[in-house]
Image 1 (spheres, rainbow, N blue to C red):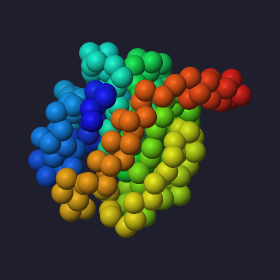
Image 2 (cartoon, helix red, strand yellow):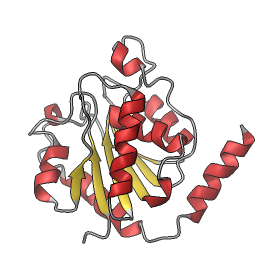
Image 3 (cartoon, helix red, strand yellow):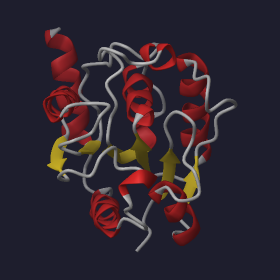
Length: 199
């Protein structure tokens, strides 16, 4: 069904072998991982540059699949007018909250998250008991980004510890997003421009 280039964007520490992102890389030939020089010491400018290079190098249209801090990265990258015209959509899973009390200093580098509407179709998937962002905060991120929000229930940080295996539900969401990328993306860009003009 692959109609797009899928770029997998892990969060802090990367995604280990049992993480659903790593499983998708093994299962799905259209998926490629966005590599960072240092997964444990993230610097926004460096991470943004690596994502931009990966998107520019991929055959368009591109679908982004981000987890945790990777979602914050997508928000910052899009707000800085990266190669957004090459992106057809984004699946943003378990966005962490860099502004929360107790967030590690390396995560706080990404605070505050941009409140700009994303100029492409996007879906936020959140857990009702995620220790790194409340469901209310995930809803706020989705509202700011112009994303649909899916409450995945109480499954923690939607990572390897959640015991999701190949996370078939997530793959259904990805397939739905891939099937939609050929739709006209003009409404998303127009909505983002209008919201930016009001600020």
